Image 1 (cartoon, rainbow, N blue to C red):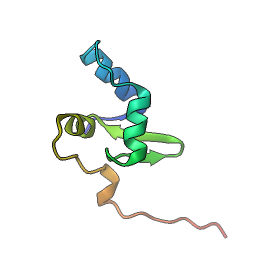
Image 2 (cartoon, helix red, strand yellow):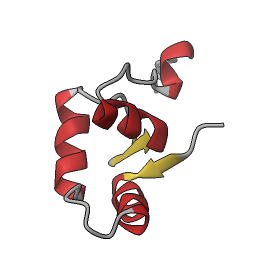
Image 3 (cartoon, rainbow, N blue to C red):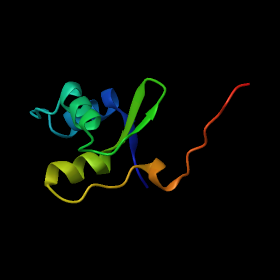
Length: 78
């Protein structure tokens, strides 16, 4: 099961696991916006999995974003 979090929640989770961590909200936001860690954007919020962040930080393969397997539907209002 993937543990999906907002940027703020992900930073808080890492801080609870390691109080001395240097991984901040700004650092996570930079990783997501640059595309180094897969994420999903819902409205103005970025959603990321803890597993994807851990994979990136360990230097391994990143976990695909949950939306990569789902086709996107474009809504048109006429």
